[in-house]
Image (cartoon, helix red, strand yellow):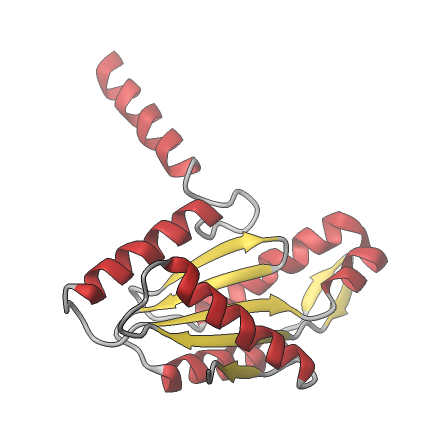
Length: 181
């Protein structure tokens, strides 16, 4: 019985080491590992196209300033619930830090990433976050980068997704932009 309990404890600790405790999404280390794994599989010719979607909650500092950090935490949890509802089985969501997230879409092209972003933005409009009894509308900007032949590491994909994300912010936020380099 002690051995079974020990294995359960080890499994629980291993799980906790991979998951962001606030949002329930993969943590930074785990989502980056998954990105590297997907890149390696693509290099071996396994699966279809892969696309990364970097998401950033718009004007999140204002939510924290107005409702405090507990309100910001509630907004992040709400955002992740809405995002999960827009995803397919097999896709991965990870929190890179703060209000920035990375979504890995397996066997999906940039059109699928645009569709996920559109569903998410619509969901956030239709379902505002409840923070201390106030209905708080959230919006999100997205940067889309497809995996390309020659990607040497996760940094290559992340750099393109981050560049596209900043293009979305410069375009007025609450939109998604595909990297075109």
